[in-house]
Length: 98
Length: 402
Ligand code: SF4
Ligand code: SF4
Image (cartoon, rainbow over all chains, first blue to last red; front, top):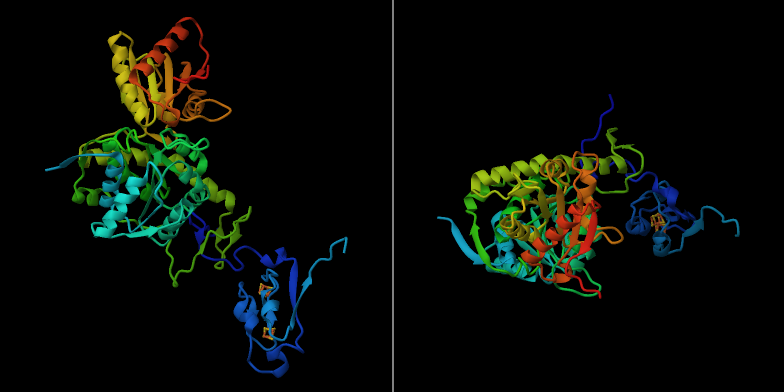
């Protein structure tokens, strides 16, 4: 028999991606140019400002830097903060009139 | 020796709060609630009450503070009136949906516009469908006793409770009140046991987006969807009636005062004509009943003490023998009839009770309601019934529109 959660309110143990894959909702996605990105191009654990500022914690502090697009909401903060402008926000779905 | 003092309704409420010892109080002063929040801040400031008094910039924040504190396991209190209550509205739903046992006094006042500071019950009535338990008090003794009971009820069923009492009519009127013994309150009210634990060892998400479907958590346990959560609240509210009755009975046993459970009755045994209402106007109907009895009319009164959950089976029993039901109320379901009578009529639908329900909207915005006016209204309703007019009717009592 399946185990049923006994909570009486929405204050419960977390699921993976509590609200589903929220990345589905985003309009823009960050694309990293690794030739500009400091850790990727210098092969040094440095900078990682995108990791620091991402409000959703979906950037990994790795070389190369990776962004989990399943949960990235496309806010563009990482692109705004990136010192060498290595992150570009691109539209995920082209609108008909574009 | 019990301590009897002559105090206002707001002071009675403040003494009740002092006795239940909440950990956190957050309230924004609004007439006619102001002297209640002032008294509480005085107790905290003087050290008489060891609680955190959070000074907020508005009622939305007041209830938000209570929601947050209650979520992490604190016993909390807030109070408001009229537009302040409406300003809380979003959080009123949030508190109930989170199943937090918050106790709040609503010192009933007319809602603007036009602006009013005087009493009617439109404010709490308009929060009827938010998922809170609503209890209405007749006098200052009932205010102090109901607040103590409210904590016991809220913390048993995990539903917030609104303790409503009429602004100025009770909040600013003095009457003798017996102050309960602190040790007996301790015996009656165990410490709050939260249904949720927030700690680094047990991480919890607090009300994230709930989808229409159910979903598995990280351990593969099936969790409710939005609809299941709302159903659970509704079921808990409907099931809370016996808990409320038990809380009243246990209170009567320990403190020696019985204010009724879901409803209360006055001279109903042989009554043909039953007057009903909520709060201080219901107390006034008992005076009208006495006057009607002197004229040989077999009248009685049934007070609605708990408006949500609505006392369906109780009113069906209480009105079973009635030939006529006369509702006096201080609120309106705009575009329909008086607020309480709409609920009463729907509770009686399909039952044996076939008596016409006459509805008098009265005392709106603090207009005085005299027992004499109530008994005259009942007499004219009886005349109508005797003429064979059996319709359910709504009248505005003492309203002069020319
Ligand atoms: S776009 Fe926003 S959410 Fe996505 S990785 Fe950048 S900062 Fe994080
Ligand atoms: S902020 Fe820009 S440069 Fe720094 S790690 Fe992120 S992508 Fe690379």
